[in-house]
Amino acid sequence: MKSNTRSIVLALLAVGGMASATLATAQSGRGGIYQQELSVCGHNQQDRAACIREAGAARQEAARGGLTGAPDYRANALARCGLQQSPGDRRDCEARVLGGEGNTSASVEGSVMGGGVIRESVTTVVMPAPMPMERAPEPIMAPRPMPMPAPIR
Image (cartoon, rainbow, N blue to C red; front, top):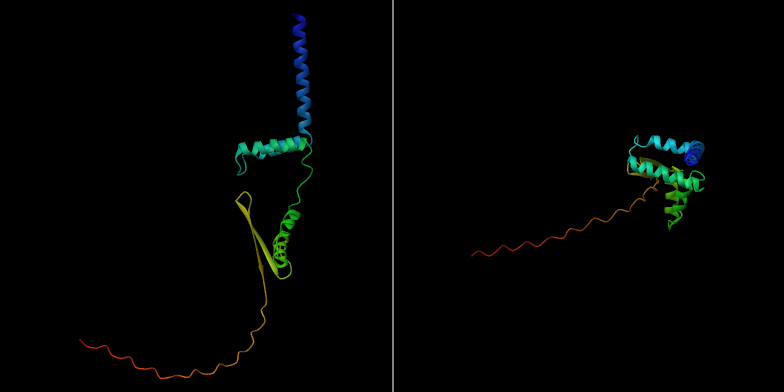
């Protein structure tokens, strides 16, 4: 009986040691980031349960080596501009992504949490002065026939 108790105590100590080693590992590296992400949950506009789920999913993906760095959003947006058919549309799309160039000014409003980001660009195009028009000849006024009065009944 004493050997069973001793074995159980040793097994519990071993499990406790493994748990503390796991917690120490979790606190370093990605685990520290996980704790930071959890501390934000409930203090942002996202549902707390969804926030905790996403933090756990990010932790799992990091453990698999899937989260290697921050994504390059700018390159992604420029790649989507490459899908535009006409060169003019492609150039306008790139100007919106890059924030305006030359005679184009761009602005960005909104947020992802607010429902979307709206990008607007305004391009100033200077139109050439209109050519002077030749004067049209005056219309000739022809006399109009008088209407016939309605018959009296």
